[in-house]
Amino acid sequence: MVIARFRPKAFSALSFLLIFCCVSSAFAEQLDFESLLSAAQKNCYEIKIAGEDVQASQAYIGEAMADYYPQLSVRLGNEYVHAFEVNAGVATVGDAVIANNSSGYKHSLIAGLSYNLFDFGVRKLTVENAKKQVQIASLTEKQTFIDLRKKLLTAYANGLKLQKQIQVQGVILDRQDKIFHLSKQLKQAGTLGREQLGTAAINLAETLSQLGVLKVRFQDALDSFSSYTRQTYRGEQIHLAELAPVDGILTRIDLDVAPEVLVARQQTEKKEAELSMLKRSMLPKLTLYGSYRMFGSNTDSFAHSLTDLKSREASVTVYLEWPLFSGFESQAKRLRLQHEIAGLRYQQQLKKAELEQELSQDVNRYETYAAGEAKRLRQLEQIAQAQDDAVQLAAQQISDQVSFQRKIIELTRQRLNVELWQVDYATSALTLDFLHKALQ
Image (cartoon, rainbow, N blue to C red; front, side, top):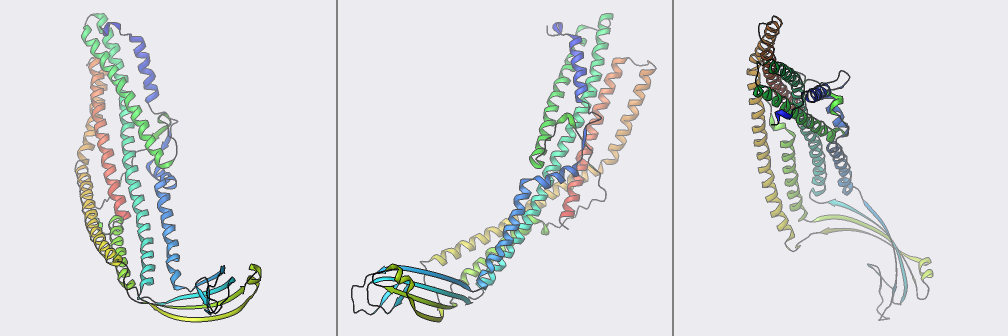
């Protein structure tokens, strides 16, 4: 049998070794949620990306403002022209037509200036949309921080509960080791059977295995912190602080000002502005254009043509441009924008419905925990009293030591359940408190 091959001394030594490794060291680094969150804000890639998006959208405003300024350009052209009809009287240099009827090298230096006089408000809407993009990027950055805090709080609460389970399993392992030794003594005295001793050994082995699994899961929880903070945490060197209690939680939260809802609203308005811009772009556009041109020509020499820029002319033009037909592109684009706007409106409604459902769950969870808080505190007092009573009975040798150890294990597990419940209660309170502050 497996029990027959069991080595009590080796098992006991291994038990105490794991207890020593699992119990939090007095010199372990204390890590609290706020310092973890602060490190995540400084090092999280999502936060950095959102910040760069805000900067990029602010720079785009200057890009959109460009149409409010004159556009100035200088162009130097050179080419060889062969005139097939000597008496034609005209020749070209680039897109300019000049009075010249000879073949040869041609040069032109043209300075041009254009200015948008009137476009039915297209450029104004372009700038307004650029500003909306800044608002969208800022709201997205805010939502990124909210999501980061929610994810990190969930991960921290999970790690804290695992830490408590490890501590309790260490205590249970110590108690079960004592039960095993007491059972061994009773077995030698003939008052306990082989089956009871085997059960004690199996319980000790199972707790030992569970302790190893918990340590692995705890390290995984710490590694999940590293994905946000870019720092390394080792389970034997870290002790997670308790979550700070929060009083005066407000459960009425206005979700209309939630970043996700506002982003959907801003995106809808942005698309509506694009649709208006499209309609206005189909109307005439009034533009002022002025140019100053210099021409040079030489039948034989490229260099002489370049230095012979003697012909000069200047022009000022006001022209009206009206795009009458663009292959039905405008009609198709208008239809696309209309469907996109309708989709964004549905998305806004969907996002608000999802947030309402999530908030309802958070509120219900918090209210459930809050309603049972007094009961849980009384339960902790009762567990502490029961432990004191058990210790006194054991000291007076009224109860046998095996029953005493089992009683302490049972009370320890009950206390763990209450403490895990308190972690969930604190997590739900912190979630609502942060959401209320973030949406003010």
